[in-house]
Length: 237
Ligand code: OAD
Image 1 (cartoon, rainbow, N blue to C red):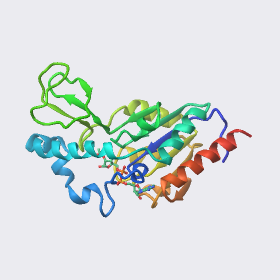
Image 2: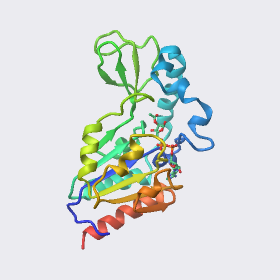
Image 3: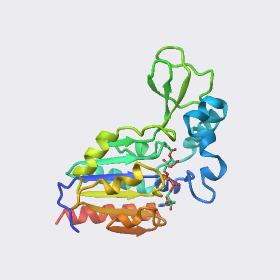
């Protein structure tokens, strides 16, 4: 199905796009949720109960960013954003900064960002590249406490109105490297209009693969550059 060059595109990414960069996914056999329980490190209750453990978990994740680089899939999405004439929105569930570092601009981090902290006192959100702990102080009000700017289970993901508006209007919805376990992202494919082309690019079919018109299996670093070239090639005719 060929798209017009002015077609509107929404792209959803998950941990699979960062796997080839060396970041662990959540639900693989060696994934993060095999080694940690969600309820111990990724809920507001966990943070109230044991903030030191939660900080340690996210400090490890934050530190791991220094050892990884964007891969060919992140770069291909930047190429698409720069070359595409129509509206394009990249929505990532990833809290790493690999899309940002690759150069994506029209980007929303719906599950927050490891490199930001939020003050529980004044609610200010700040860049945060070092370790965070119970004695961390807010750069704005000088008090705190400060928490990772991460959407935990039981909390509302960010920018939902903007994302659903874009989904309703888009001509192509592309999901890359996400297992379809976590809502609302897993339901995005159902939120698009009836004429929208929907494509899943994933190592294994996701839980919601049957809702897509087209599913391609493989590594994001191979599939995404090839798909982007196909789109740009088609749009040039
Ligand atoms: P998952 O770990 O649930 O799924 C990763 C998906 O990527 C799987 O379907 C894999 O088959 C696929 N995959 C693995 N390696 C790949 C590769 N090289 N190329 C392409 N695909 C590959 O991660 P997410 O779906 O992102 O939320 O998880 C969603 C949310 O659950 C996360 O944002 C996180 C987690 O709990 C929060 O922390 C709020």
